[in-house]
Image 1 (cartoon, rainbow, N blue to C red):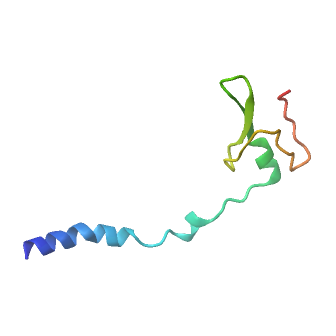
Image 2 (cartoon, helix red, strand yellow; image 1 turned 30 degrees about the horizontal axis):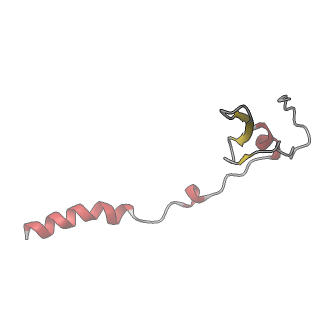
Image 3 (tube, rainbow, N blue to C red; image 1 turned 180 degrees about the vertical axis):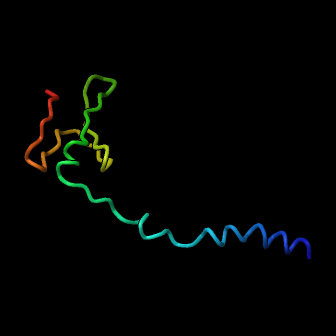
Amino acid sequence: MKKSICVWLMTLPVIALSGQVPLDRQAVPVWTDEEIDNAWIRVPWSHGGHYYHNTLTREDQDNHPTCLSGVCKWKWD
């Protein structure tokens, strides 16, 4: 009897916390084109080159990013 109560008490948090993720945590963030453009950074490679990383979308690419908003003020070159 004691073992079954102990097992029940140990599994209760797992059962309680295994529900679905709330809807607000599943929502995809919506950013404006200007916010996405401003989030690009140039990251240097150890061999001397570089790649581009977007800190909002977590996208990486080897080529210069496309300006979505039309008002980009990148000063990398």
